[in-house]
Amino acid sequence: MVLQALPGIGPITLKHLLEAFNNDPCAILAAAPHALQKAEGVGPTLAKTIHQWDTTVDLPKLQARLTHLHADFITLQDDGYPPLLKEIYDPPTGLYCLGNYRPNAMNVAIIGSRRCTLYGLGVARKLASEFASRGFCIVSGMARGIDSAAHEGALEAQGKTVAVLGTGLDVIYPPENEGLYHRIAQTGLVVSEFALGQRGDKTSFPRRNRLIAGMSQAVVVIETDKQGGSMITARFAAEQGRHVFAVPGRIDQVSSRGCLQLIREGATLLTKAEDLLEELPYLMGSVKPAQQELFEEPAWQELDLSEDERCVLGALREGGLMGDDALGQATELEPQAVASALMMLEIKALITKRADGRFESAV
Image (cartoon, rainbow, N blue to C red; front, side, top):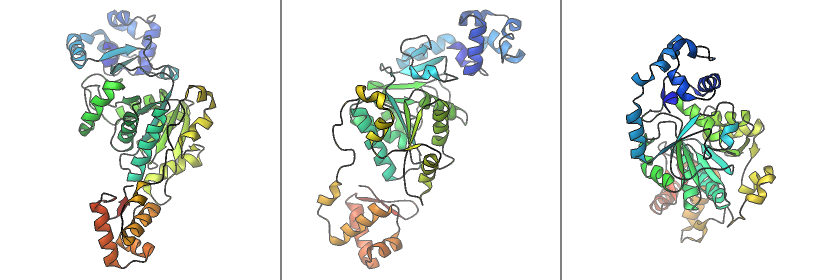
């Protein structure tokens, strides 16, 4: 725990240090600077930092904080360490864990954009629920958008879910996910490789992404731009020999560009849980049968809607994000009729108006 908390030591450097000192962390902390420099990647500055570790790391305070959180620190040698994570090139030597659940190999990562559509949120929640009900643990990053919806879907199915943080275990980000954080910890696991108190930065979240991919059998990407963080996770997954799946979206939406590119590059198109099982047939014996159809007939068809409301809602369901003019063209309704239908559909919480003025179906 001390070695991992020291600045300048990443998983690869720590791996070299342990190899040089017969996997004895106490010997590393007690070694002289010249002896430490024999390990690959350790120069004079880092050797001095390690030798004077107690000036940087307040171990009693760190242990007290861990106890206060009711959290654990597990290492590669512990039975509870995620088995698939041990297979990657640079696994963290230790993990901070909040929650009693320890993931096995039946893990599926569901990830996507923070700036997602209602469609993306719905798909993430439904897929996570379906996978969780079949016995998979859902792994994600507890970020806004798709990640949060995936965790919520798993919890709704009373399944297991793991949140991998890009911050210290005691730093909840985004702050509005505090409730979700505690719910995951109660039945699943919140995990981080970063020292307690560490804030997220531009390097910590990509490091977090490699863990999401590393502890999963497969990675499912739902809505991301070409430059999104989910693309980094997908790249890690491919490099680690994991299966990459992408949910298709509209060709004219920014949030679909990344998924469409992944499919073009060889990712498997996914529209239902069975698509993943067909690609991973060796898991079939461990998977529970489906409880229900993933995408059932929408309940809105049974609602008491006017003809204009039904027409506008149908256009939004088929056309995605649309403004007043586009809806008028698609439905051939007068502007006043479109405006009236939109107002009633908003009141009934069947659609939502986005910041750019366009509307989106919520069902």
